[in-house]
Image 1 (cartoon, rainbow, N blue to C red):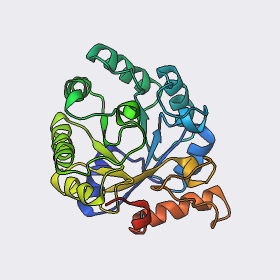
Image 2 (image 1 turned 90 degrees about the vertical axis):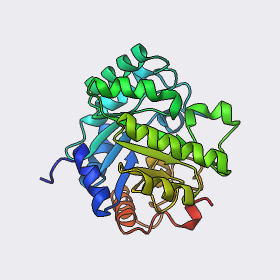
Image 3 (image 1 turned 120 degrees about the vertical axis):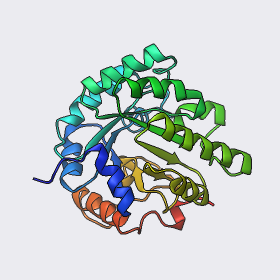
Length: 264
């Protein structure tokens, strides 16, 4: 049996230049397939609000939803590191954040993920000090979609780019294990990846991140709409297992994402 991925393995992968392959997952069946073909990190994403519940955004997802899907996804995993999103309005203060993190870890999550930069540093520091592993999320933050006024690339001007870079450095200092960079210019993602010692996981952030993540349902072409940062790997590979295997291979070989899935 392949050795279980540990948090320290992700740091070592960055150090030796090995790309980290990540995908979202929501149940035991898919988790088993993804785990078996070598996906390094599985994320129980609040994207389930859109791909499973049919909502237009992630804002209606509850902690109970995340606990349920984390618990059942965990049953299909032997190797992959399991991360779970802290949903919208579940970490508004330290007490609430700690309770949410505790529930997700009890359900099987090894890492909890939350969105935000300097405004959530106290939350992250408090969670980390209690022994929880934390994944950050910068750039486009789906839980702030109403603030952005839609799905828009972030960090395109110098001021915003500097803010995101500084937030990444601050998150590292606060103790996060890794940072998801979503929908930012690939040049900015490269600068951030070089500036911090923890892994960056890109989605719509170009080839220079230390790893890549996609929503599973986008990868297999059943979301109804494939966003620019994604690619339908199923259409040319015949089965879900082969599609995921090709995704892992393409990420590791630095063939995904291409310029078509990136922003400048």
